[in-house]
Length: 453
Image (tube, rainbow, N blue to C red):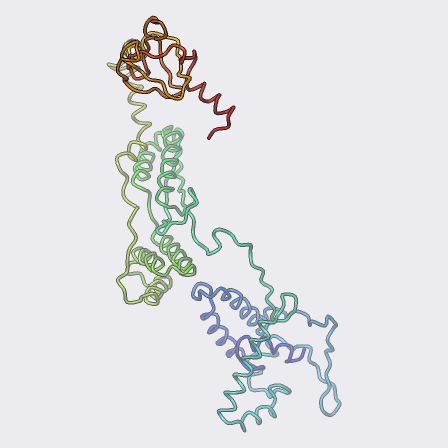
């Protein structure tokens, strides 16, 4: 395999063909540090990182390069200038870029003749040649297709999802929170002299944490009090879940660091800075690599303004939460009082009497409100005068609208009849303006027939 075939990988690492293993390793570390997706928010940083990793592994011999685009087998024998054959079968790996070949004179692109030509160039010519090579390489990268090796972009992207930016979602509610936490809850199971404690860990938002804490407590209530060894651990687990569980410092700092990177990639740098400050609270005075990375990102995001903190929603359990966790205990106490205590006859005697008295009172109030059962009528005119007497000379109380429901309150007097409205008004109207039936039902039927709004 010729050196020209590996030239694209040397150019990816910005090194000359025939470089030593140490030079390859240093160049890879520099570019990997620059293009790592956790540090670089450029959308193409992940592809660049994968490309330089592929080039590094091929040049040091951990991976074989893909076959040439021509598809044919390459000739492993080449000819020297004097016509003798020389082998080029080992054009990759340590034979091509190993430390033992660092001082060996190369032929062709990096041969001694080329080095002599470079030595004669002026500094301006070197800069111009480097710029030209860089522009040519960029043009090749932009024109590459996914099916053309070597060095092609063969890293397929996943389909776009709602969480494509890498946000950490709540395991229960599925929401993306600015202050997620990794929370641990305890579930205790016991039977006779056996006791088993299970730790449930999840990335949660505040609302999701309350729901998972209740689930863990109820599972402990159901299965944790069947053994004498599990009695005290079950109570400790319920009280710990009621107080919100525990927050592992290392897990929370790592999770918040990734959440801050996701916010930064989405362009929300102030919120990313606020999430990093939460991660720093878990780190404390720790000097681990993750802690140093968190501090470095905070310094990088420092724009000179006062950092803002999000409102802390992770507070201790309130009274309602405590009652929910301890509600099975109250049920047990109530059942014991009913079965064996002073309230033994409360369920069988007092409660039915109370229900009967309250039912009778409610029935009486409803009858007083509705009154005696009467047949309804409704007004079949646009406007109908309600008068205080059976004559056109009497005073008009108000005008009734069409389909208003009324009830007959007295006998008819000629063309007049005494009625009572649904709001308790008494008066006289024309007898021929009333139609038996409910006004609401008549209005619905009329609207359905006339297609009114």
